[in-house]
Image (cartoon, rainbow, N blue to C red):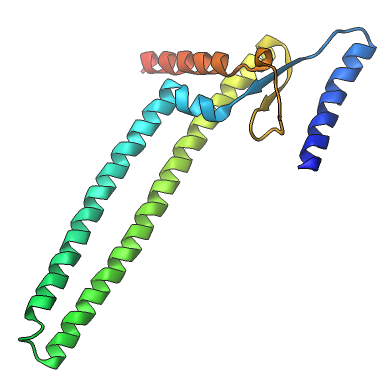
Amino acid sequence: MRKCVFFATTVVLILFVPGVVFGQGLTRVGVIDLQRCLQESQEGKRATELLKRKKAELQRELDKKQQELLELRAEFEKQSMMLSMDAQESKRKDVERKARELEYYLQDLNEEMARAQEREKKRIFDELGTVIDSMGSEGGYAIILEKRAGGVLYGNKAVDITGQVIKAYDTVKQGQEKNR
């Protein structure tokens, strides 16, 4: 934690001191909350909705497989008294195998959802990076820090450009959709 604060302080000093010493005035700094951009931008909302639909679809598949397992267990319990020992053992192994398959399937679904979330997040963050770069150069910013990961413990609301980035990103995405 101290290293992050020290690093952030050093970066700010390196950027501000030369401008003040040479009479150039203060250097412009911006702070952005990428998580808020992800949640409030139109594309972020669209991605969230897409992921919710995908999760619901995968949940339906999982429910179907769980129901099959429950039916197999019920069938096994109903028939167990009438089956021979070998048949009982075979049926029990089938139920256990099906339970393991369901467990592996659940792990696969969780990994698939995590990958899909990361893929969407990365795509949006990459697109936001382009918007932030152009805003930074056009707006005369010396540095734009990410609020949560950049070691920013406090930032005046005046340097928070999250709302502007969200508007610019939405405008860019709307322009891309119109060109399609």
